[in-house]
Picture 1 (cartoon, rainbow, N blue to C red):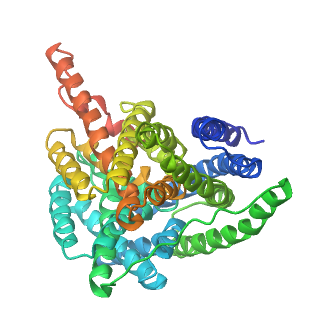
Picture 2: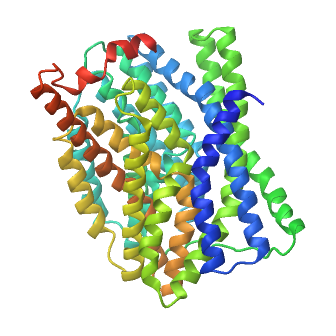
Picture 3: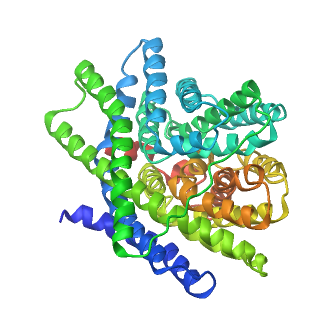
Amino acid sequence: MNPKLKEKIQEAFSSVLPISAIVLVLSTLLVPMSIGTIVMFVVGAALLVVGMGFFSLGADMSMMPMGEGIGIQFTKTKKLWLVIGACFLMGLIITIAEPDLQVLANQVPAVPNNTLVMSVAVGVGVFLVIALLRILFRISLSKMLIGFYIVVFGLSILVPDNFVSLAFDAGGVTTGPITVPFILALGTGLAHIRSDKGSQDDSFGLVALCSIGPILAVMILGICYNPQEATYAPVDIPVVETMQDVLRQFAVELPHYAKEVISAVLPICAFFVIFQLISRRFRKRQLAKISVGMVYTLIGLVLFLTGVNVGFIPVGSLLGSELAAAPYKWILVPLGMLIGYFIVAAEPAVHVLNKQVEDISAGAIPSSAMNICLSLGVAVSVGLSMVRVLTGVSIYCFLIPGYIIALLLTFKVPKIFTGIAFDSGGVASGPMTSTFLLPFAMGVCEGVGGNVLTDAFGIVAMVAMTPLIAIQLMGLLYKKRIDAAAEDDTGADDIDDIIDYEEVTNDA
């Protein structure tokens, strides 16, 4: 086995083991499950581990070099209109390629799937262009985020109640395992257009802005269609009794997800081929490595999506509904926090972001610190989501104060932490959230007799919000550390004295 692949699979195993252990303990002590359901979950977890390993290696070999190379090439052309057009097209393509977007589309039957997908894709394309222009013209990320979120919350007043939570969920769902590696690398490449000290700070923030486009797109659709009644697709829990039944479930679904992933990745490959023919950016050896990496990415995504959709969705829904029916419903809050703490480590795009942050900061912001902050943030968000489901409190009671705190912190922390924090919100709310936490919340909501569309939906938005605060609080701690170092006459009076951007750029 490829040593790097083996290392990635071992990392994935360490990430998935805690959440798998929690589910198995719950199935033994609190929520008895059939042996077939448990075996289906274990097989799903195994596919998830192997899939994450392949995907992580594939993203390193293909998606990251592709995105960074395209970003750097953009900086060499003086035709701004051409860069804007290509950037918009890229945003369109990678969003349509995102598998999680189809899951969201199926949850909104009041709007035709193609209409929803194309609207969200246009939203991402437009905001990717806005993110590009922000980097080129050195516009403050904090000011842009404040302005756009004022528009978002203002527009939400006109949106039907059933669509508000869905709209905010759209922002987290669209920035998934295909979108994030490409956009993060594109930001790094685009930052090369500037040689000033703050250019690397601005390499983050693209995911943050691209998360706003889908929210606005779904809100506008909700206003235009104005459905009197919205429905959702309930989770279907298959009856599995034998190992043959389990294997049949995976065998039936695997070709479906293979077709979905291939059709999603092909447009990206086509765009890259056209780009390569025009620019001649990559050499033969690099192209061979990228090609192998794309194969790894395809294999990884197919296995990952099959594992989580077949093995995790039924278990998540069953756990939620059974625990909600028990007399000790309060246990859902601490239990949700425990699940949230560990589940974020199983998000494939989180590993991509953490590695990017560690590389860009030359190790000044270690991936271990990022992992802890993200885990704490997601733990709080899932705990609050359980409170919301159990009590029926409006999502506004959490999102508005949360975003106000997050936006105020942008004026207190070093710029690099603002970009990282708002990027991490989109990254943390990936396929594990939509295929385990969302069914879990839906099961709880059905168990307590709540409104699934207004109470259960929105958990993705909550998961996307709390990392904004957690990562920026980490930034405040780093700032205090720097200030203390300055008082000791070490000469480090700014975050840029810790992060040697010139060295990072040269290494890149």
